[in-house]
Image 1 (tube, rainbow, N blue to C red):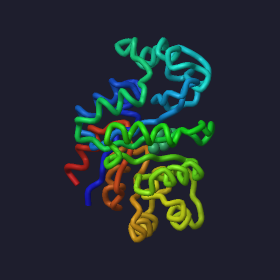
Image 2 (spheres, rainbow, N blue to C red):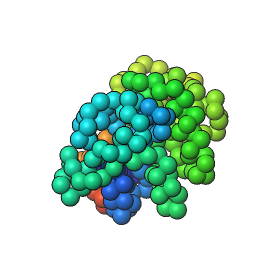
Image 3 (cartoon, helix red, strand yellow):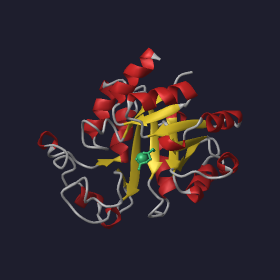
Image 4 (cartoon, helix red, strand yellow):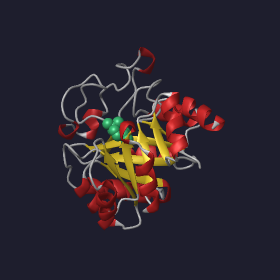
Length: 242
Ligand code: G3P
Ligand code: CA
């Protein structure tokens, strides 16, 4: 069985996460797909960043939701990582979608709405992905079960995944009831029984964040459908050997 290798926030070990440099590198290194995170600006533009605030990955401070897109574009999203990336800008979702359109890559767009439940984030992201005709190779994921339901209401055929960082009793029936097509779980939650149960229910299992060869091999051996890694080149290497 084949495991899809997603570059986590792009190749985030070697380039600043969620920047075009990290996405380019993921493609060059043979990733099957790219995982990224989306928030909304004050003027409702979807942008790719992991944290709610800009503090860790730019030279600014404050919440993304309090910046207009124009203001965010003034920030440096690369210098914090290494001087060679100085001048990198925060990427709007549209730029990413336009770039990926002609590349044979899967997309996993994580809606970062578990701390801030942005108004209409689901519809905005869904409409942008649909506009670029990318729905068939996109999974929209979220830690927020209510958001997952909203996504399914927009289009019951859209691929959605429930993100989990903790163990839950009755996890598989819960995910199924929400309409999830997949669960995305932390590596420490992975076990063969869970993979088998999900597969019986026709749900995929993808695992984050898998950076060590031993962990990768465990995911491949258990039949995980995907992994998220900061080092896709390493994952591609071990997957080819598997
Ligand atoms: O989508 C998998 C993984 O990215 C979820 O955790 O915190 O890295 O966004 P996080
Ligand atoms: Ca993520």
